[in-house]
Length: 215
Image 1 (cartoon, rainbow, N blue to C red):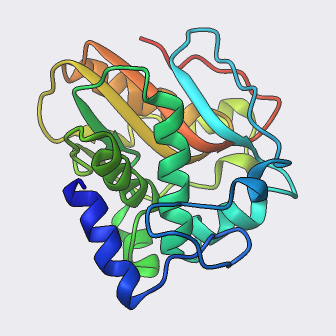
Image 2: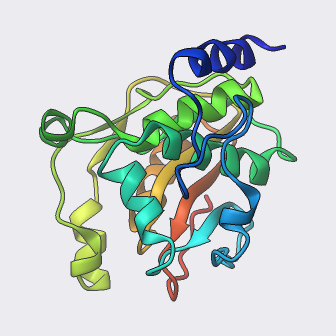
């Protein structure tokens, strides 16, 4: 049993593991009931560069799950999201996992950053180092989905910075990709910091958006 597996086993003794979709008690080494996700719409997002993937299409079926990890801080949902993403990227090779950062005001309000929690769990599952503080967000931005495309680009332009130089292949995690502008901007910052490849992954993808997350 891995260290990560042992931690989940010991935690299960005190807090029995539950499926975030149906709330049923499940095995300590499980993340969800397979039947619970069988009919959920999977993302078919393709950014044209093979540098992005998402688990679900974001709609009325998947929005409760996204809400539970994004706005409720549900630990079972965070772990399930990480497991599902880990399954999708396990065939790829990465040197480091990082995430889209939250601004200070949002962190004070919510107390956590969902992409950071997901990135840490993926790191434990795949045994790849992580640095969830690699990127910083300088200011609070408007909600992307309420803006036009040009407004989205202006809204996010220059908001991220790298706290250190990097090398190698980076896995960049976000919770939801709405327009792609956020991941595109963060990706370019990571390339400027020295990354040789950046692969972006999100739990859910709002349909009907195609953007470039490549170099």
